[in-house]
Length: 357
Image (cartoon, rainbow, N blue to C red; front, side):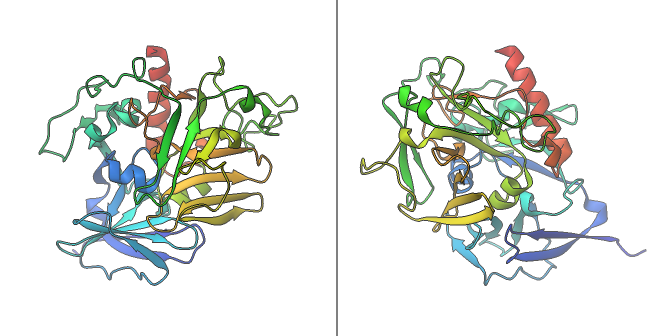
């Protein structure tokens, strides 16, 4: 009896890069771990990444419209030079490709997440603390390479990196993997209240069916005591398709709280940034060299930027809790999720994380 095949298709946001490949249906779902390594965070702007391996008997994807970035001696990363979507890993030892999970169409049932790897790079556990189980089973938690490193207990932290004792300093550095994009974030102050937003965005997504107006310009981008910047997780289609990954973590920062590496006031188009208009009202900015997802920039609120949390260099670790107040009540645009099991796991984990304080 012939082995049945399942076709898996992927595409970048702008549609210039498309790829389909076959896997044996009997091998689905493919067991996979979420990667929390420094390289992945700095290159994607996300707190974790995942990929679908392509069997070697498939033709290689066409790479003409993509930009190569040699992130290590092990592999090359390929991203769309027009919209920034991270599409592929190409491994040098055998030439096999892996496709970014967020670029895959109809991904439910393609991957079965079993745990986390390279937690040690996060210093504070990163997003692995929000997903301690998958499918009711305790998630594997590797500090480094799976099976070849120690396992990390829940609430693992590198010694002396707790957010409660971390030194916040005057400014928080943010940078992509290649260093072509670098800037600094200042702590909230009275100037932060001068930013404006007609929509509450993360708190009440515009497609939620509820009021999405902010007539009193409530500064939702700050914590309640106004000492931290708000941060949250987004599962919307455009964020997923543009980053190439299921969840994009954003923090919301007034433009007046940003400075460039040379101490100049913030302005668009510095360093290796490239822009892509993802909708009639919004631009995405990414590094043209390494493909890092950097900013979401809305025409409706030009004084406020969404910044990818994976680029932050906080002393406490990847979650940057001495700087950020995480929204734990919802994964924004949860209804858009193309992998409901993963998003439900994240949502439940965030709620429990909030209850535990």
